[in-house]
Image (cartoon, rainbow over all chains, first blue to last red; front, side, top):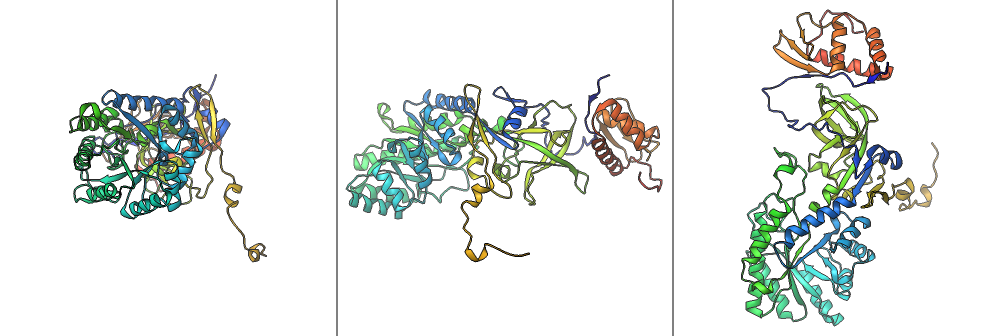
Amino acid sequence: MEKLRYERPLIRKLESDMPNKFGSRTEFLPKTHIDGIAVKDLINDYGSPLFVISEKNIRETYQSAKKAFTTRYPKIQFAWSYKTNYLSAVCNVFHQEGSWAEVVSGFEYDKALANGVSGKKIIFNGPDKTEDDLRKAITNDSLIHIDHLDELYTIIELADEMKQKPRVAIRVNMDTGVYPIWDRFGFNYENGQAWDALNKIMRSGKLELVGLHTHIGTFMLTAQAYGTAAYKLADLAIGIRNRYNHKIKYIDMGGGFASSNTLKGAYLPGTDTNPTFDDYAEAITSALINSDFEPGNLPLLILETGRALIDDAGYLLGSVISNKRLSDGRRNTIVDVGVNLLFTSFWYDHKITPAREFTHYVEDTVLYGPLCMNIDVIRENVSLPLMNKGDQFVIHSVGAYNLTQWMQFITLRPKVVMIGSDGKPYLIRESESIESITAYEKMPEHLKSFKL
Amino acid sequence: MKIKKNVAISDSGFIFNPDTGESFSANPIGMEMLEMLRDGMDYEEIRKNILDKYKSEKDTVEKDYNDFITMLKQYNLIENDGQKDD
């Protein structure tokens, strides 16, 4: 007689009268395949842990975002937010779809150029643009979004020196009804800083004011805040037209759209509660269309959303190292995915599912990473099937920020695979080796040897 | 190692401790282990029965058995007869 599949014995107390901090969801339905490729084959071929990106998902998500805006507004341009995920293969999927590049450092700027983006289609944001960065951006006729007056003065000096008219916009911060206000970047709308900067630009005569930019926050759970922001930028643009007879070419609404992830402390899953592209698009485009812009002469609307476009395309595959008990009897499971790889586990209760079939029995579990470091917690409370050492699992919606904010800490960073639209896996980033780390180190001569 | 005599164990995986009023549920292998413990089997017999029926290994069963007993103790379902654990 063939033996039955083993599952570890489980007994759990029934607590019908207690609020359950482990949440109502139980993730026992397995994620066995990603875009048709078995998770176990991916781990077998590329190792565990492993980041997997779905090209198909990126393209579909991009198209749905584009549709939400283009069905409501005549001129739309997306610019891929490099800091969200600047793996070149990922960037190029967005560029193939038509996205420009949005960068916030000289490094990202060079990466966009190296990927083949024309300088004219690079938006240069951020508070730290060096003089060299600005020279390069001016030479390439990129769109420079000014963050502070020191930068504005530097650009005016460079314009003089280089005998060029840089194309600039200012970043505007404002009260959109969502607090705290993100007022550290750019110039404030309410207190007149924005007008002060705009007057300086217009009166200098040395810069071409082409746009207005804002980025009101991150993971915004209310779409209406974007409506307020769009209204205020439109008000500035109309004011510039009236005062200087100068037309702004574009309004850049930045990013900050929420993905489907669930923020820590949220009662309901993000998939049920977070605004959709349609919600954001409706708020923004309604505000612009209802403003005093002439109907046939609306400015281009630029969107720099990153997270909402890439989060769901990313998966992190891992394996169970061990099961233990904490002193109070709670189950703890150690896995080979740590916070060094999954930075976003500090923000989200990531959805985690097993990679094979289990019974419906689940156990409330604390999920720890492999680092010898107390902060290495992937989920404080999660109901998981009875996985054993070696069992594989999938962490969902990890495409945003993890592949840029991950750290080489204690362990080395793993491979990243993209499953192409053709259904084939492509290695898009090699795993690190000890040489990748030590190659940057220098050893003083007197420290080269020792006796123990 | 014995389950307390007055602990009620139903066939459907429902366990009730009348001393505390607490209820528990168990998965099928947990139920089998509880029943074997109630029938007075020792660890060696339980391990043999489990390995005869399921695809597993001695080390895994031993680790899981000890973990299961720890939880039974934590939930006060084991007879406290002053004897040393097996």
